[in-house]
Image 1 (cartoon, rainbow, N blue to C red):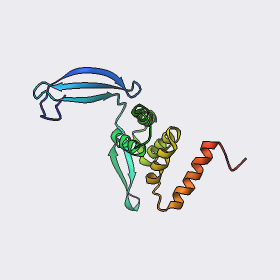
Image 2: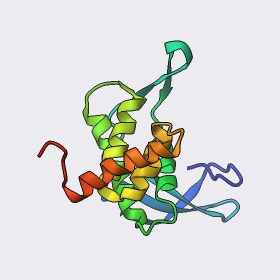
Image 3: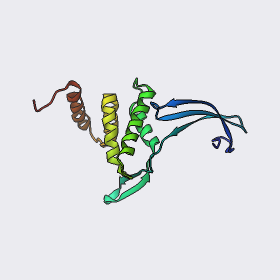
Length: 162
């Protein structure tokens, strides 16, 4: 494994342990050249996934699936909430497994967004609303109010069709 500090090609594994609900292996490494320590993660990758993103004027862009983008978005939505890092990792791993088990080589970004929304809805209502405000592009306070009202209905089990 190449050292991220000095780019030397050799490093030693100092410690390995399961991570992300046993979906990955976390390895602590030490560079044999500069002595710096760093962490790597090893995960199973079933296939290359391409994400289809809607662009301007209906154009679709394609880019490789990047788990880190989901991690960053979910972490930002959960910021300053009392949510264990492990639960965030479990949510992200769950979304990644859902994507990989669809059997499709391509997936629309909106499908990924909905998977993340479903996971956040079960994890934390405030993080769910935060993510939704960006994902669904809320423009006014009224958008928050309307969406929060639906979250309240789900949380209390109320439905309008009773």
